[in-house]
Length: 92
Image 1: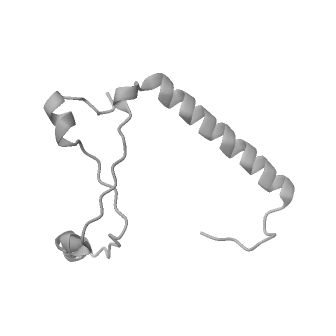
Image 2 (image 1 turned 135 degrees about the vertical axis):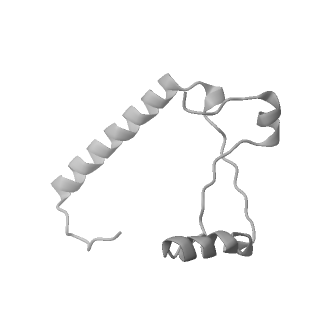
């Protein structure tokens, strides 16, 4: 979303940035405390033909009257090596 330039005053923007930085710092600290290095999955990026997702797009529209934009989509899971090792990447 976008707001016009000058819509938020400098003091309000400064406070917002400070609060946001504090939230990010807390989230990083909490994540590092709760999750070990093995539990934080590495992100893999895969580029595939959009036509692969057409059946999903069509089903979402047909069944839920939802017009999906599937150009950017995140799907979580495990690679074959992690599955073989039995690594548990869940949020237990």
